[in-house]
Length: 421
Image 1 (cartoon, rainbow, N blue to C red):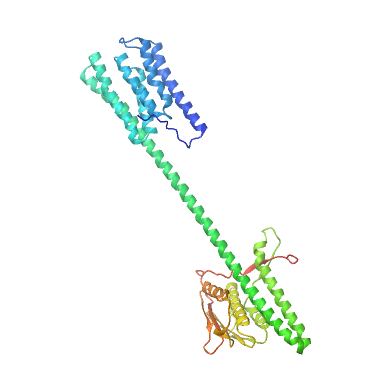
Image 2 (cartoon, helix red, strand yellow; image 1 turned 90 degrees about the horizontal axis):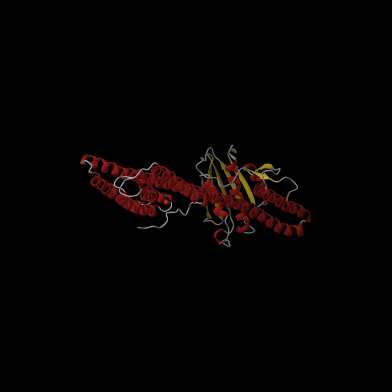
């Protein structure tokens, strides 16, 4: 028989201590009621001395102190004491009240297979004990049957109760583990969503900064090259070129500060809100690129949301950036905006190098434009023209539904107060 301790390694020292205290208290109570009290009142059978019957009663009850920690050791010791009971008494001693407690404790603390040993030992005792008493006292056969049934019930009933309670405890523990795993899964999913949102925000800011820096630097480079040639022929015009370069740089700084300020500001910092570029700013942007680009509009400017306006603005900005970088020094371009009833069509064309233009292959401009237009539910076509040059054509619907994810960011971004760099 396995006599290993049944201690739960997850229990704290205080839990184990409380278990010992409860077991010892129960053992002391049963010793007082079923062993000491019968001894004091002189309860005994004439077959053996009262002291010997008292000792057997103590040996039956004392192992209960091990019920929560070593239940199988308890069963072994109580079983041996039960065998001794057959030799010292020709009738049931009061200490036999310990039998239901022993069987229940084994059924409650031990696994199903091992706990059947308690049933086996108990049923053997439920037959052998009454038969011994029947032969020693000349009972009637009917009385023998009743005693056997009572003894059998004292074994089977506590065993069934103990097994049921153990199964209920296991089911509760399994449910708690499943709930813990579910909560951990939910937390992991929430963290994953937070990480994805952070990645999306970083990509959005990188896209905005790319559009701002690439366009502004391209304009400044073109203006500087033109100003160098113009300074030799018309020195008075050089001032206008320098003012354009300075204005473009200041505007780029303002836009970058507007975007990066969202990350740098804390909730308790004083901040202001400035509108992001929209349809009304496209004309000024085209004008800064110089006289090589013209703007033509068709229809009336619609009353559309800031997301749509920013998307149109960034598409024109990126297309002009590519024109300034790749079309060539003598190329000319045209920006055409067609304001329809339900859509805005943007077409930017040039007569530059087209497919012959040199590129480092590291740009993200066209990819960013496609992402913006796709997020608004529109379409974009870009590529060299058969007759030469390059063409970008985008269609942005005015009734973009909420099912489209807007990659352009918030329409109004926080800007740090003046004086902050």
